[in-house]
Length: 291
Image (cartoon, rainbow, N blue to C red; front, top):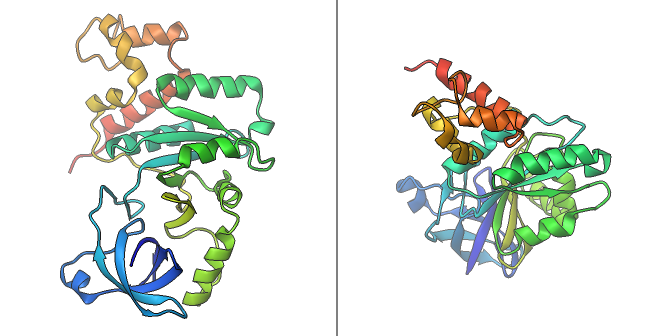
């Protein structure tokens, strides 16, 4: 029987199958070969009991990709949730996440929550800043259930990792997309003898055929890895069309005279929020210690 690992904790793996949720252990051969099953893995299992549904993972099917953080496999895209207000968004953190996903070749959909308390000017600014540089941008109000259907449509047929800072409405969105989520968390908690609490481990929820979302712990910081300051501008695609107007090759777009990017910024063609984030990240990468 085949299924997909939706959660792994305390040596047990919970596999979504056509018969239901199976609690499984991995065969010793995986430990011997130093292979660790991951959330998102498609696997073959053999059942040892039907009631309760339990068994062993006997094979991990080929992975199309693998993420280190969160530890997972076979992810198609990331859905990044940020609140427009309450809490105020940290756009620098947003850009860090976008760069990290770009490094992993993972498409990103940005979803801004709490649009019901945002001004039209704030919505326009976000659409221009992030939609203008090529990202799909969605707006929703989790408390009012607005925009949920649009989110659903972009998830269909894909395995999506859901990420964002704590308190921005990820749990509200998951419950709106999948009302059984709390029941499934409770079922797993009961099996492993732990109470329910905030997300500590990556976990998949099945929304439909071949459609899964992965909840992940909220983050408040993200350090850029394996990025040099000279490479940073490549993660800001909106700069590209204006770089031909720079006087110097290899322009960093910060202190150089006659810079096409800074001219575009002054003319309102590039987002001030995005540019300021770029400068902050450039200085951070410039000053980082090399060991």
